[in-house]
Amino acid sequence: MAASVAKEYKTVSSVSGPLLVVEKVSGATYGEIVEIIHQGETRRGKVLEVNRDRALVQVFEGTSGIDLPKTRVRFMGKGIELPVSEDILGRIFDGFGTPIDGKPAIIPDKSLDINGSPINPYSRDYPLDFIQTGISSIDGLNTLIRGQKLPIFSGAGLPHPQIAAQIAKYAKVRDGSQFAIVFAAMGITFEEANFFIQSFKDSGAIEHSVMFINLADDPAIERIATPRMALTAAEYLAFEKEMHVLVIMSDMTNYCEALREIAAARKEVPGRRGYPGYMYTDLATIYERAGRIHGKKGSITQLPILTMPDDDITHPIPDLTGYITEGQILLSRPLHRSGVYPPIDVLPSLSRLKDRGIGKGKTREDHSDVLNQLYAAYASGKEARDLAAILGETALSPLDLNFLKFAAAFEKKFVSQGAEEDRTIEQTLDIGWELLSMLPEEELKRVKPENIAKYHPAHMQNKK
Image (tube, rainbow, N blue to C red; front, side, top):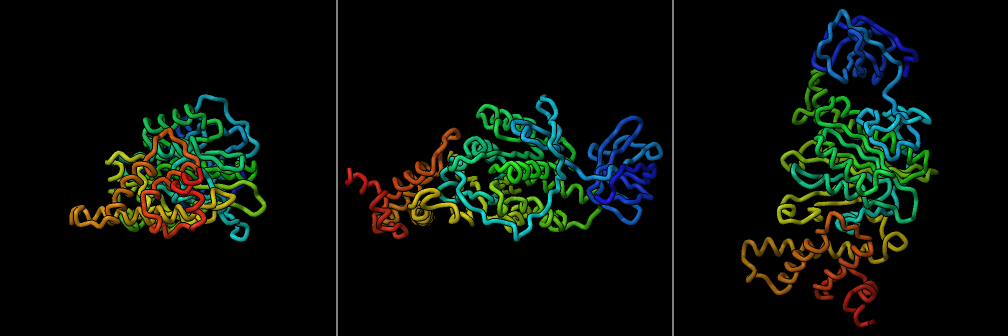
């Protein structure tokens, strides 16, 4: 930061909502932390804008009751920082990095600016290697790779909190490397927060996790800081402590709503659907902090979760997220209504980097074949289902009927699994082969003959 020492002013000229304007300021910088002292009470804030000698400050705790002539503003000469050490593992913090688990404060090795530093593109290493989540629809068909950013597109009332807790519980790397979970909750209810905390504690995942909890009634500016706090902790664990870190962030929609709220308070010209025009850039500063760096053993993998307003995938939040990230996991309301858990719609879901993390030596040699054949067969089954809804099943050919039965079995046995069921990738692929055995072998056009001979249940039975 340009300012290196605290400077204090009594020149607050106006207050509007959570914002106040300080005049005759020198050396203030964007993002600088300030303290607002009023009648013995100290509030915190952040510089949002500097225009010549005028600074616009966002007050974290709000401006209610502030008397302008009696208010002093102290510019601290630094941005928001997170104290870090390995002791952050197993701890629960609020959105500003203050411990809320009743344990002693962290004795930090250092304090890091939460805005981080951009990774030099030349230093970036390509995302590589498989992360096993225990969920077949992800591991088998939309594989998560170390260093990838793969969002989950959900909707109101769909079970994304349960899926997030399940992934946090069972996610692991297969080479025995140190693995950590950093969980950031933004704008969630007290009940949701309690669910996440209890789930992490009950499963034991809390021991290798760091949790940042921002509740719905917490200040909007804290919601803006929460994912950056989480990613700062993740960068410390990944690139200084050589861990593989999975960052789960829920709910990015609440983050974007806070962004819109602050933009409205600043009287900025709104963009699409009232969101600020710079929302794409802002989201990129979060999502692009995932990755691997040449020469570093650790990695940061992101699993952001967002609820699509009105289940609209063209809404600005999922739309912009899709441009920045490497695919999406889409949850289906019809599957949820039919009792399928997790209700992942595999056809519109996509992991663009999956080919980098599957195959011999990473998952299994038949993974790519099973993935492609299951996808194709399920697509044919869905087409047959649509045709049957219009013409009736009697109009379907025997092969169409076969694909129709396959689609139903695929949703029941492959997509659907218990919330406590942790499937290995081998179990997932074996279930895939069991389902593919419902189809004539001549229809398995995307599977190599040697893999059919080795893994097809009928051939395995003959060998026995």
